[in-house]
Length: 159
Image 1 (cartoon, rainbow, N blue to C red):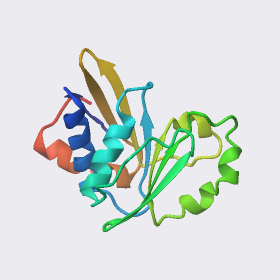
Image 2: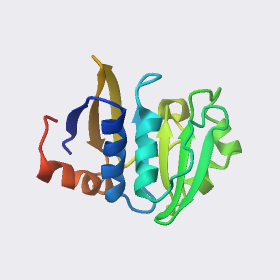
Image 3: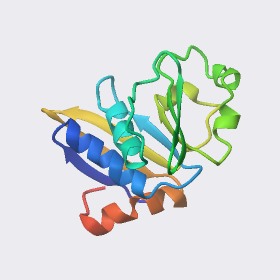
Image 4: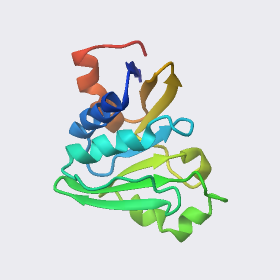
């Protein structure tokens, strides 16, 4: 499975990428968001949610761990596991119910849930570079491949 890489010059471009990804998302999609603090993970989620019809505030769930959203396109859970002390805590927040195949789940800092979280459909790596971000999208399932298909046909980037 090959990936897709591009440069995002600003916050608007990061949000637009989230909107493009949302176009191919289906129920049960599991996305892992990787990147240092301030890399744009929540900004990408905001774009995703806007494409799905949510125009309210989108905040990082750093302290709440999970923010649920009901949108015209479906249910989405945004998780931020940065402050998770132990992966077992995911059981306490009902991770199995969140990952029941009905909602899209976008998870920041997924490495904090290692051993509990299943394999994702898509990895998104955001890295700060100069004044912008480099993003690398890597599918990990056929569902992730389908989400990336429009990116490859529109403007192929190095994998």
